[in-house]
Image 1 (cartoon, rainbow, N blue to C red):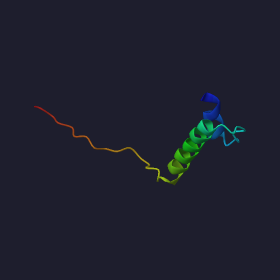
Image 2 (image 1 turned 135 degrees about the vertical axis):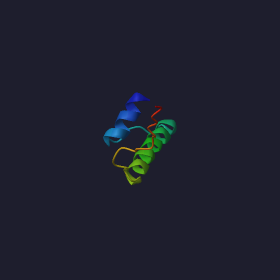
Image 3 (image 1 turned 90 degrees about the horizontal axis):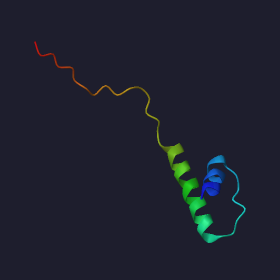
Image 4 (image 1 turned 45 degrees about the horizontal axis):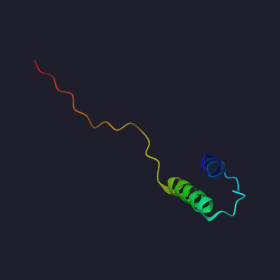
Length: 54
């Protein structure tokens, strides 16, 4: 599994005809493509309140 993950994330070919390995490889490649399509949110979300009890 580790070898397949590295091949998929580094953009290498799998070099295997095993259907189970191919499906795992294709799943990882698809997830990576989906991540590239998502917009990147920049900045720091400031969704907190500061309460002062005096």
